[in-house]
Image (cartoon, rainbow, N blue to C red):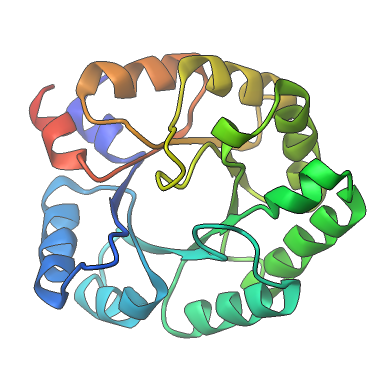
Length: 218
């Protein structure tokens, strides 16, 4: 896989709580230099990133209900609307894990549906499953619900739950959603070989805070 083609599917990520404005500016500069798919930042930095990236093809991605997924649906929808108004072009929302494990599938579906509605037709929504906390059957159910709720992607992990993406989970998710829906591998992807393994397993997007190192290893 060529350097530009790999860079074009990477979300260049900085979600640490102590991230500074200068670090966000550096993230944007790196994204422009390597032409990553997006920068993925916490909502407070969306407007700054949108300004820094104005006129470029690099999109601004932000997180909703992050990192636990346990905020109410109304709060997630409001977060999404605010993020889009500030310039977010992609939304990564954390699935309500407790509801899924409780068997409250209709609530999970409604939660995602409301975020998709709030994002609008031009802003794709990626649903973070937090695969390290789920059984295989729960992962499959979450994928099905996300697809039927109108999400554009399913995503493995927040990176904050002690586990990340695995090739096995990417294969399972790709099989569950079929060939058309996006699958994002995120969490613990720090080198080129791991990134490529995820792509070969079925990932169509990579999320990483080590994006520059991954590309430089090519």
